[in-house]
Amino acid sequence: MAERILTDDMIAQIQAFIPRYPSKQAVTVPALHIVNEQLRCVPRQAVIEIAQLLELHPSQVQDTLTFYGYFKQDKPGGKCRMWVCRSIACALRGADELLEHLEHKLHVKAGETTSDGRITLEYAECLGACEHAPCILANDDLHKSVSQEQAEQLVAAVK
Amino acid sequence: MAEFEPVLLANVGKPDSWTRRAYEATGGYQAVRKVIGKMAPKDVAETVKSSGLRGRGGAGFPTGLKWTFLPPNHPGPIYFCLNADESEPGTFNNRVLMEDDPHQVLEGMMISCYATNCKTAYYFMRCEYPLAYKRTLAAIQECYDAGYLGKNIFGTDYSLDIFLHRGAGAYICGEETGLIESLEGKRAWPRIKPPFPAVEGAFRKPTVVNNVETAACVKHIFDRGVEWFKSIGVPPDPNNPRDAGSYGPKLYCLSGHINKPGCYEAPLGITVTELIEKYGGGIWKGRKAKACIPGGISMGILKADEFHCPLDFNGPGKFGCLGLGTAAVVVMDETTQMVDYLMNSCRFFSHESCGQCTPCREGTSWATRLMTRIKAGKGRLKDLDLLAEIGDTIGIMPGTTICGLADGAAWPLKNCLKKFRGELEEYIQRTNPDGWSETQPVRALGPLLSIH
Image 1 (cartoon, rainbow over the protein chains, first blue to last red):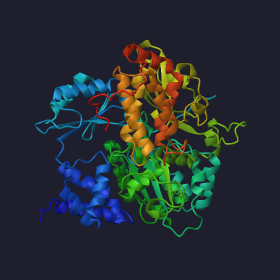
Image 2: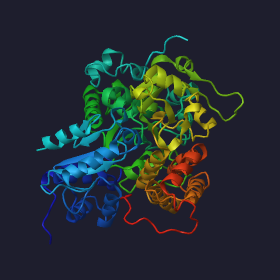
Image 3: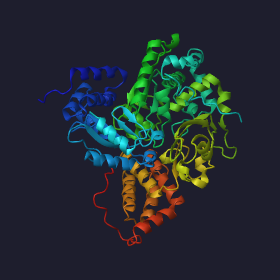
Image 4: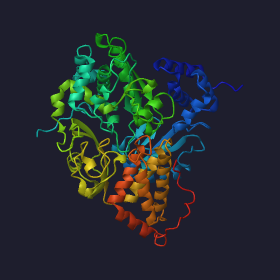
């Protein structure tokens, strides 16, 4: 029997969502968010435990998890998740170059995590901040009209 | 015409505009008090219907009419979903509203729920908006604390719960049945319609899905009246019996190669030129415009000599575009290569295709591979015909897919091939002098850029 991954706190948080919806399955995405927030990924064992809580088959939870690009499974993302928007409004103002610049600086490709586990660099499709193009969402902070120099400072400031 | 006064954005930029105190100081939560318990829900829906309000999310379906599709005298529950999964490239008007004036949205939502006899509403917000999420969550809590949400709101016998639900990063959740599937905890695969959500939606119950800006408009219709709403915008085209008119104020998102990008409120029907000159401060770096996206990337493209196009629900269609969409105008200057624009568009749609319908899943990826090859200087003129064929065969209109994502993917292709074919041909011939006329199948490029 694999060791339990979900903490009591996570379970309590997930259960608090159940009365909000007429079906337990609807709690799948909130539950994935709760686990992902704590572990920066949702391991297979967590999927099984979420399924038990929500009275689902693990494959149903897995099916949902894999559909959404937001959740990682195999290993945790970096402490800072850095989304570089590459959609049209940002691309017109240099987003592709910005992403490439960061790839070189961090020695990772988009989607990968730096070897020290600090930063996961990702591209994003429209972050909805087109008036501030090009923009970067680093965890919960939106950085506006980011130049390559500012991006370097941003990377350096990540603890 | 008198100077247009912003209504939807009136509070944006004021100190603490996201708090209930600030919102109520400027007359917030007065409209809902005039409605709940004072008007019959049926009359509320009729008022919205008579205002001519059309959904602001992209399709422009008349909001009041959508509500009347709910089965009458349904024993319930009826669900209301607020579509805050704004992810159309170029679009950020909902974000501005949710970050800076979340109570306005909630008030509109309360009125909409009351009109549709809904007692449980889900506020479906994309996860890429952390600030909007925090402020909306706080605003909902403020409403519960004040008795504006929960049991017997505003001291009436009407009860309403609003739950904020976070998405997980998928463009397709903006499609209303995709949103419903996602809300139910599944992959966001759009459903075949009918049944429409109004008959069988979330949790197999009648459901209304409305956009954030639509809800905000509903609030103002009850604040200022139907006459006020109809005094703004464009009446129906008498020569087009299917036109429902374009009434009311609209939030236009202006971005790209522009001096002052931003979200601006203007009457429906403003032209692209007016928007750029009056609000956007002209094209950046003193350059000339080459083209613009009229309403989010899926709507296609307008050439600079088509900028007199009015941005109402009818306008962009007359210039070969798909429609007004989200009214997100992305301007490109004269240095922009159409190959880059088309590559970006194809890449977006192949990334966001949900994978349910084969023509869309394969067609969008194929288009991206073709564009990658063209961009890399290995294109053939024949590729443009292939792109045109993909554009003509994917989508609801040719009848090959369940939802309109593929139509949105097809439109930039179709528009660009029609309006800028010469430039694309020139690019191919210039970058691939030896192979542009090749008609035999060629090998795929080695390791392609990661599409997915």
